[in-house]
Image (cartoon, rainbow, N blue to C red; front, side, top):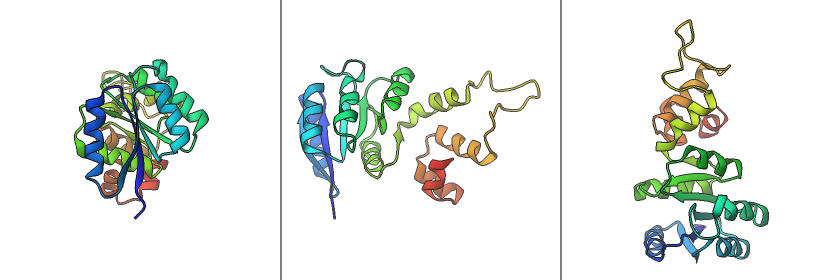
Length: 193
């Protein structure tokens, strides 16, 4: 079995140690390095070429997501999974715009973090379920209180019924795989929707 190689980048040594201890318990995951600031994360991502960079959003040298931007330029095959305490829609949107493959809150359960790492390594996108509603509402250009038109129906902006169904399930916190299973379609179809 080929292991998923993970580079840990966080300015808190105790958190890095905890993440490393979690990863080594998994037969398919391998921590390959640790960085304590943005420039070191970029340098190690470029030299080690991990499958996944688990990157703290707010650490020295990562102002305005500078480390993410540099990794995307210098090591474009490295998939960046941002780990943050910030439930900030603006930061999430900026991270996705800059090429982040995922965004997980530090308050997430261990199982959720492991799911996110594996999803990102497979080439999927992963957004913390707590943040998906904000993204979907932004995409649809609506909030729950604004979603009714004069006709009383939801605003869909040309989305198909199936796309709306997929979006609703994602907003409820289901992963792409769970949505696929629930709707009896493939994960690729969910991603396309």
